[in-house]
Length: 72
Image (spheres, rainbow, N blue to C red):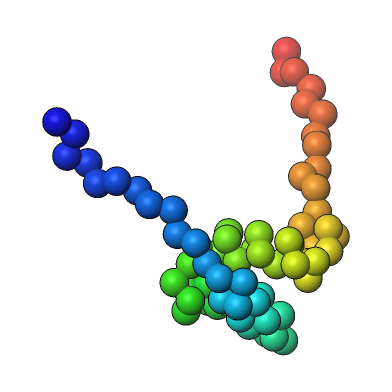
């Protein structure tokens, strides 16, 4: 018998998402602090910002690739 707790997916209303996104848009707001205050993970808040179009792609630049030269 498996006694591990079941994980349930949480669903957030559009109004709640909008509230978090609006709070993150405030000047000087920390996404991590806003997320913590609303009881969600900062990565989720960042995703909602990205999905709302609030964050441009330039804010999260692509990872720079580096050519490695083997050491001989």
